[in-house]
Length: 79
Image 1 (tube, helix red, strand yellow):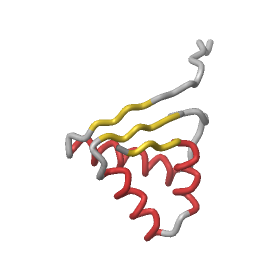
Image 2 (cartoon, one colour):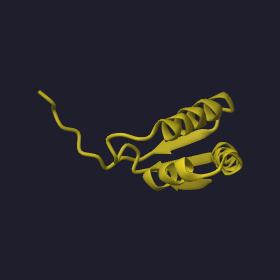
Image 3 (cartoon, one colour):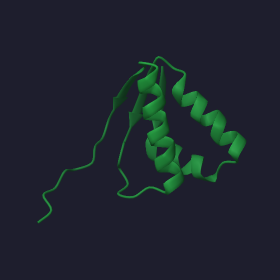
């Protein structure tokens, strides 16, 4: 099981070297359960961070590994 505060992790990933990014991705794919806390707390994320999120979700799906997402963001109607 791995617990990740998403906004913090995405910021760190964007600043990491290519080798460190590969290690971080592997660390997010391998656990049987991944808990993503505060998902989409920030309205916009950098492209490299969005790529990490999509690749993580795709690879975990292919391996049939579980993900729990938690978001405390308030949903508002936008007129």
